[in-house]
Length: 247
Image (cartoon, rainbow, N blue to C red; front, side, top):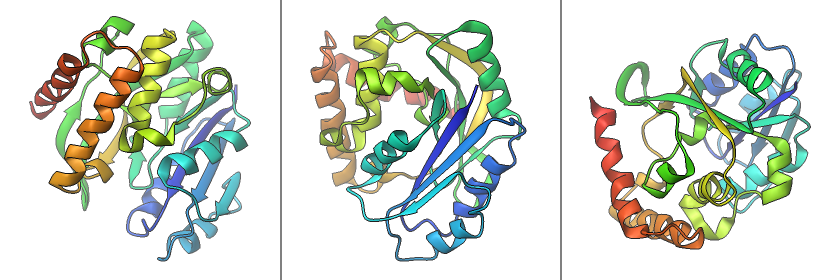
């Protein structure tokens, strides 16, 4: 079973090397790595080119943002399963993809997700929050639960069946996709109790009060579009669930 990992990058020269090397260090043999650069103005693409013999697909061209670039990567992917790794994040150890593939092969599910640590930007050994997931149902999604997106691996055929990331939802494009797949289409998932990703704190939806407010609006639109029964309650519960990540 081939697994595709997609990384999209724009001006992430500080952390990109760590991301790439965490993918290339995986001990799973049938791994495709796609890296889409949005025509960075820093040294990101030059860093990526140093690994071009080990990266399956490497592209640098303008795009409409992160989710447009992800959709490009999905369109180029030839794997049976597709996962996303942000340019400033790293896979937690060299055996992550082997464990993910094992769950797919043994269970026949459509998606696998696991655990994630939020770490300090300049010290990935300093854990600031822990996102511990659990087995969940579509009803849990309706009550504000969601898997950690960077740990989510999905069968490739689902992107053709249900569509890819919808750019109209801005920073919530990943949340909308998870609601669409998990709640509306009732995707069959399996929780893997494994630390899969170390994610550097930050992100485009947390840059300022204005960005955070827009992120709330985007989340609400995603909930409404997927006909979540009580979208405001789900939105509140989604935020409250983060409290446990600090303990």
